[in-house]
Image (cartoon, rainbow, N blue to C red; front, side):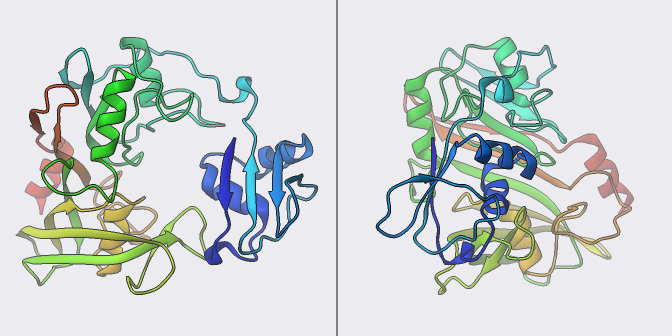
Length: 311
């Protein structure tokens, strides 16, 4: 059972649109069937939870929405023999170099070809936070490639997950560095970007940056450093102090230098490359059992190198 409390950013939104946004790859028709099956509940004011009757029910601040589990045949998935780039493995965890275009875990309407489908074929994994997310400690966007750590045991998962929590800082926190090619020439050599990030009011599948002093969204902090400047582009390195959805992509757009190839936040017409130029190039964390800091770094994909050479 998934539970959500409605805040001001969702006030007045249709229930089905809200659920499509927060549940991920689920269609409105699937949400409607779920509502008709009596599996979506609403608590408003002092009333008790009641089954929702209308998919278009407008939401109010303070509403509590609970969504029952989808049928197992809707979310079931199979192990698949998909080639993986394994960077490191021991009995507690595995570090993967995820390719561009691979979704991390199955969801309704997207049950095959994901990283999880490949992982369960090769490894015994932790239970994860949900049935379709075994082993998944943190995620990368579909079109972001690079390093991810996956837990094999529940104990390892719990200890690793804490290191990726936004409020967890200091020497015990996981550290992530990304390389991104941005549109335009960035003037500053270094820049710290602090905003809040929340759902885009006009596009519920996208995120947007809001003033850090405001009440909307969650605090997001990114540190950007210029690596090399080209005529119309800038190669940059990013360190995340928090881990919000689409954080680098949103912050890059916020400073008017979107990531090259980003179809959601970037330029409408893009001819430089297929996919987005964003790679999780470096990952560092404390081993959940030995407490030793492990650090992994990969080079960027060959197509990225070829584009830089061309530039």
